[in-house]
Every structure is written in C-alpha cells, then in structure tokens.
Image (cartoon, rainbow, N blue to C red; front, top):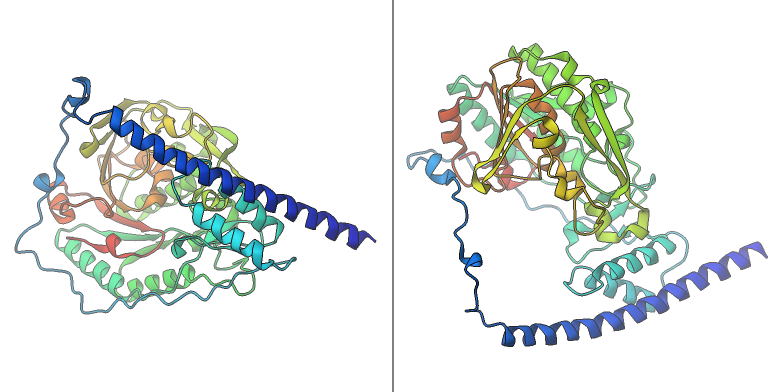
Length: 449
C-alpha cells in the first residue's frame, strides 16, 4: 500500500508540473508576441535621431594595448606542426533514475530546455519548471541547446559540465616554446594546474557519465614534465593536505570557492618564497587574520543557472577581507577602472554581490570584478619589490586578491581578451616570474604572440 501511495503522490506531482509547464509555455508564447509588438511600436515613436546631448558625451579615454605592446612583425610563429585533433564525441546518455520519462513529457522537457536559452519573458520560470521536472524524474544529465553546456549531477549532488577528451600535444609544445623564450629573458615560468570540480581520486560519476578533464590535465602535466617545465598541480596539493576536494567548490558553479582561492594563493606564495627568492609576510597567509562574511543561499552558479535552482539548490559565498591594514592600487587600463585604498575597497566589485539575483549576477566575479584583458595591482605595503605576471583564466578571480599580498606588482593577463603582444609586455615590464594558471586547455590560452 505504501508503494502504491508513493507512486500516486509522485504521479500527482508530475501531472501538476506538466499542467504548470503547459500554462507557462502558452503564457510565455503570448508574452513573446506582445514583446515583439511593443518593440515595433517603440521603434516608431522613438526615432533614432532623438539623442540627448548627455548620450553623445565622449567616453573616457582608455589605453590602447596594441599600441603599447605591439606584435613584432618579424616574430617567429610558435611551432604548429603538432596536430590538435578534434575533440572526441562524448557518448553521455540521458541518465534517468526512477520513473521512465513518458514521450509527451520528454517533448515538453526538450521544449523547455530549448526555451531556456531564448530571450523571452519569464525565462527563469521556464528554467525552474524544467529543473523541477528533471529533479522529480531523477535525471542525472540535463541537455542544453549548446551541447558544451550539458549539465550532469554527481552522486554527491554537485553539478558539472560534460567535457570531452582532447589532444594536448599542441598546447604542451606552445608552452615549451614560451618557456624557452622566457629563458632567453632570464625569467622563470611556472605552470599551475587549477583543479577541476571532479576529483580524480573520488569522481562521484554516475554510471554512463563520462568526463575527461582530469585525464586531459594528467596528459598535459606529463608532457610539460618531459619538457622540463616547472609545474604545480593543485589537485595533488589538495590530496596531500587531506582536504575534501568537493569542499573546495561551489555546488552549482564550475569555479572554486573564495576560501579555496585563499588556500591556493598561500600555496603559491610559499612556493615563491622557497623556489624564487620572494620575501613574504606569513601573517598575510593566516586565515585567522581575515574577516569572513558568509552570505547564505546567495549564489546560483553557471551550472545552476542552466538547470534552475529547483534542480539542486543554491550556494553560500564568502567575502574574505583582512583584519589588518592594507594599501592597494587596482587598475584595468582598457576599461578606465582605477581604485585605490584598502583591500576591501579595491579588490571587490560590490555591484555583483550586494543583492541576491540568481540569474543575472555572478557573485563569484565580485572578486576583482571578473575577467580582464590586463589587470594591474600594486601592493603599497609589499614585503618585497617583485613583479609577477599571472596569465590566467576565470579561476584566478578568487586567488588574485590574496596572491597580490606576495609581491609589489601583480599583473594579470587573460589571453581570451588580450589582443596585444604578451612578449612585448614582458620585454617592457620584466616580471620576476611568469605564472600560467589554467583550469583546462583551449586554443586561446596558449597564443603567446
């Protein structure tokens, strides 16, 4: 009898969600039509030439990095004899646990997933209804319109993207060539492998779900080791410190947490002291010397936004600020961003975290404000006079503010957005060390022109 009642209750829930989804789809369709009509009316009554004087004010002058750091015309191109083979097709299947998805419900779910990426009114309601469907039906893989952003749920409830196997040969060769170039400038290179959300020692993968990120990272580090490139593997450091790998990550986002970023900066700072002759202040890397303000149920990450907060919940996020006195200059030359003062006044973009907005804000990026082509940070209370160049991806957001404690100047470059010559930058600024820190491998990251 209990099983029968349980099935009736579950079927009632599915039926209710089905009716709500039909209603929301119809309402959204009508809203979309209305939105189009209003747009056409607005265009007719708002001529494009009706521009106020305030709107025509010139934008603040910014720095042209291409003029400041030009690419040399005679520069030798990085060897591209190694072929970067196409990513293998990921054979993940729709994993369903519990009820079998009826054909009509599958059509509704697929339609909901397609509408989830359209710019329509009540978009988030579609996402959340779709997430609730998938949760009730026990789906462990939620398909996205863009297959690169299919979301899987691990056994522990953490969400991950589905990443294919890649050939890292070209990337390893480009890194070796870059190391050789830096050696000519008497500048050491350190390659840091940021950890992926799936632990290589405890993958938590459901049956039939495939993810090759750790295998790709292992292959990359093995190739770099053969080429005598200095490396630091944060996955191994987590294991050595007997930390819970998943505690380092948000449940709904692909990034690590601010506490993990602090831990990572501490590891790098000690390596800089021991291997690269940096003087550091140990108190700067004692978490007891920081205030931690935890914002509860405040954050829905990149993966959670794809499937809805109803699918697996939300995340807390910490704001970590020093208890001691600090003095920094923070600038992004191409965006006319300039801040000076205490850590708390320079290292955060509070607009991204001051209010809870699951689907339109990314509180993780409140740390330094996200991704920039070139970001310059000066620590006016540095224990040394060293300059670091950190070539980075988005994992650096949570680490950068704390790494800035270890040097006089911390310059970061994100090659996805930086169009000037990184070699011209290096020759003009002469960093004491260049650090590459990546969470995965892709073409833009290794374009060392």
